[in-house]
Image (tube, rainbow, N blue to C red; front, side, top):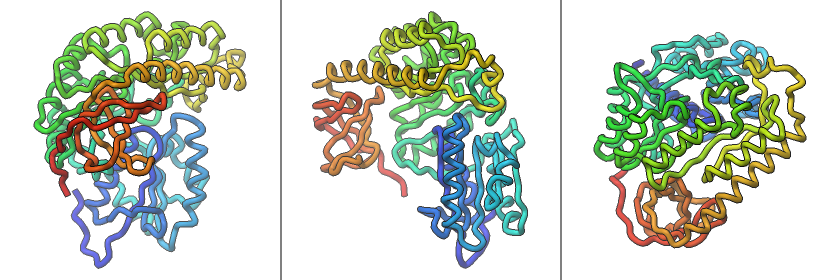
Length: 450
């Protein structure tokens, strides 16, 4: 770890994050690295000594948005400000980003964050750098993240992906799959609990394929769930193929594991799934759902679904709708297919392309189906009582946002409660997607550190 330099005025860094929770976690690692090198976090870009934009590349829209944002941020730069782009978009575009945005000095992929302090120093001397090599040993084990959330912690246990779905850019931007040492994960979880954080979310591109040193994901769940002070344990995102009997038994047997799984389906058609190279059929996905629900009563499922994938016919889309209705997902992240440069899907015959107006209509129908089913189920849950964890102040004045173990959002009156508190609430109303709740009883969380 670099020593903190002795300076009269500590330099400031502002990090803006786009994309998935892995990016959120990576931003916390970057901030930890720079804090150890003498930087302080800036609340906004205005006048910051360093501005970093941590990016996503999963869809073209995300990259277009970042390019526009880089132009907007330029006006906040003062003399000597260093602008950098990090994350998946940086990994994908590399030096091309330096050509597109001349005010950007640094382009750094997900495995290059340890070198940030030195790269920033070099940029001050006029060196523009693109660092996009993969480091298959890098897990940032000795970096202390600076967490932006004082209630829950995102903890990476795996980086990269070996599945290579035909639509997905992740293997290109994150590299091959590698898992973090189990003991190191437990050490970080223990340190997190000592700070008063009671919920952890284990992160990986296909998190339940975790395997290292003779340990699998079942071992990891049991080890993390045994850490004193951890009351809730979640993980994202798993792959349907990696829910072994051992993993499901661990989920059912570890009290801290919450009754919610985000289980990406992507399509309800076996033919579409084959073109996506998802490596399971519709029937195998349904079997996975059945095994999970048999082992974990009350399990809530959310998912990801893509419409308009090359070659998707009306009948194949209808299979997706029927799967959504049959499984009864509580919610879904829904997307139109977005072709990404460098993925196999871009090489599919042009005659398979689904017209945008067709894909848009299918997306509208899918969203309506998901929301309609969720609303019916949520109306049926009014009057139930659930333990909730207060996460933050809600946008609605005088309320707090809390969450049940099965991942339902509940708004409660703010009187007498604070983020980190646990309480039992009765569900009193619903908008169809979120609930309002009346407190029945409460217990304070462990005291927050700092």
